[in-house]
Image 1 (cartoon, helix red, strand yellow):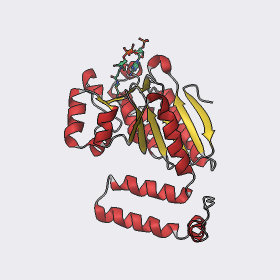
Image 2 (image 1 turned 90 degrees about the horizontal axis):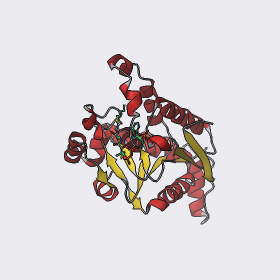
Image 3 (image 1 turned 180 degrees about the vertical axis):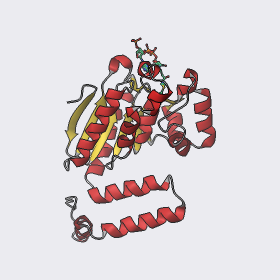
Image 4 (image 1 turned 135 degrees about the vertical axis):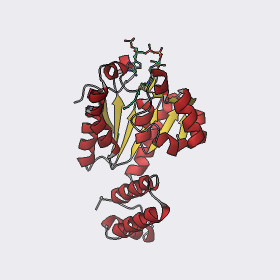
Length: 257
Ligand code: HXC
């Protein structure tokens, strides 16, 4: 079991990962990112896992990359930084990933939340890219994913001033899909996970892939990919089951085939 993470299975088909470096406000060191990437690899292979919720503590989802660790790396060290590969592995996770964010989601913490497919935030959550205050800039997607999530003007403002925004503001911008009372953030994220876990896994997987593709390709390419995925699903047993269940006025039983 990883040292820096907790893993629970509170609902059928749903796994809950809790970042667990409370003394450092869940600062993302190499060990934590490596353990998270390895755990997601395991959950990818686990047919019993159909959705994952990722959370931190009430005080901090994650306060960024571990600054003390970062201080020890020069340019060559950063070029060879193993964390880059960990970030890439996390980004390749093919199942739905829901971030349940309370407290600080700063720097790498905001970037990690943006690796999730859905962000649920508690009142009091703070999203920001404060790297500029350290004389650096975001390095794990903060200029790219943030701009796609909130638009150019707000991304510029957040990255260039380093100032954070609150949960309600993040929701208005589209970075966050729902805001809850902080004590219900994980519960709400798990409930969404449970709904997704009840759907046909292949359809969920291909829909996620098509939606992510929409962020980095032109419309014609995206529409082509969507059509291919839609066609592939016609070969699945779950599609036949979903349609038959509708016609027979009963709930479908999806098997992932
Ligand atoms: C290492 C951190 C940390 C971090 C907090 N801590 N953030 N340690 N890396 N990113 C540690 C503190 O040193 C302190 O340890 C303990 O956590 C509690 O933090 P406090 O500062 O005492 O708490 P508080 O006063 O409540 O302030 C909370 C805070 C502040 C506003 C979030 O901690 C803060 O500004 N943190 C840094 C945020 C940041 O700049 N993030 C971006 C990092 S750069 P001790 O031992 O003193 O108790 C980044 C680049 C990503 O993310 C690039 C990816 C490739």
